[in-house]
Amino acid sequence: MIGMTFIRKFKCLGSIIGICLLLSVASCTDEPEITEHKPPVPPTDEDAYEYIGSIPLSVSSDIIITQQATKISQLTGDYDRHLGVPVLSQSLSRYRIEGIDLGVPFQDGDTTWILFGDTWGPKGGLLDAIGYTTDQDPEQGLKLDFIADKNGVYEPIHIPGIGQAAFEVPNEGIIDGDEFYVWHTTDHSERHTMGRNVLAHAYRADAEKAQYSLLYDYSTMYFINVSVVKVNNEEWGFLPDSVGEGLVILGSGEYRQSNVYLAYQPFKKLKDKSTIRYFSGMKEGKPLWSKNEKNAQPLFRMAEPGVGELSLSYNEFIQKWILLYNHHEPRGINMRTADMPWGPWTVPQVLFRPWEDGGYCHFMHTNWEYQQCDNVSNPGREYEWGGEYGPYQFAHFAKGDSVSTTIYFTMSTWNPYETVLMKASLKKR
Image 1: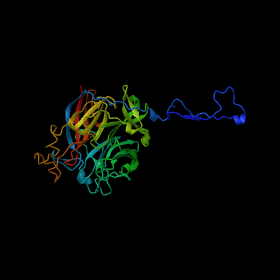
Image 2: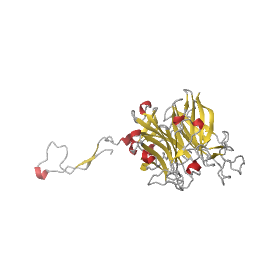
Image 3: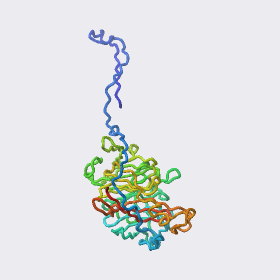
Image 4: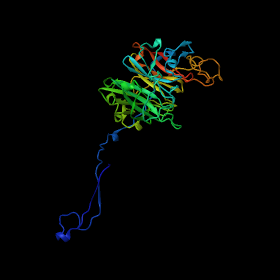
């Protein structure tokens, strides 16, 4: 409310009193309406005090790529036709997984869970398999097991109340004791490849059977795909909370047409959507936070917004936030780094280039109409290009020292329709 209007009317009371008071300033006739404007009353809704800040500028990188991303091994399937060796996981013969993509890892003590995307196999409907491993050294490859039914066939994640067909996939997970949380896209349509992101929950006994329940709609705007890192709030100034544990959340909106956005949520209040705070820009060197997603501002400007799948980690060795995402300009797996979650983030460096770094004609299929230089395609897909996407980091597998690090991540190749394990090395200038 800007103010309150008070209207007073005075009427002559001569017939009752008999005389008008001589000291009265007003006459004894009807007076016109008088409107009195009082000073504005301060609003009580905290939303009224929210500001939209500036979008941080990108800066030059102080990180050098000393080894471009290279393939260690194929994670899924039975046989790696590129390297000419059996795949450790034997996911076709053991679990009847005929093809798969994505591969989002999250840590559970000595176990690493891996959420996969649209899965080819007897379950139908492209329902999504969940893998796990207790291997600790990615240099030797990772042998995956999968949640399976009583017949040994992969058991896909099940979240009642949402669609789980093509492009409706899990995109992040985190564990709090015996409680599992999974973010999952849904609402695929001709208009929106991925229309909504939801948060699902399960206690361990159900999670180990891939049975989840829907908590709430997480986003229909800027956090359709997310990547989440748990932090101690005391170590990061200017987060919405200064104590306890929090979640730093990076997100993208319209599939592969988006900027990158930042949010925060208290870890112990993950079940309460109202606790999410959205980065709404910078002001006087500090991040601003809003409880309205519509106020979210990009972390950096992009000439051509084109982000979909993305992955965030904090690397303890070189003390940098590392963001990976696939993009068409520049083409490949892009990397940006920052000292703080809100930046400033560096300009992109291409960590994996599909031609120069041994992708095409090696473990990513080249359309035979263009060049017949490999035999790795799925049968019947010889004239369909492969492609790189879904670079999801194993933050807990990173190695290094105070000036250098080796990072590990999954990457999908589309044709063949499998997921591979990658690594790259970085160094401070």
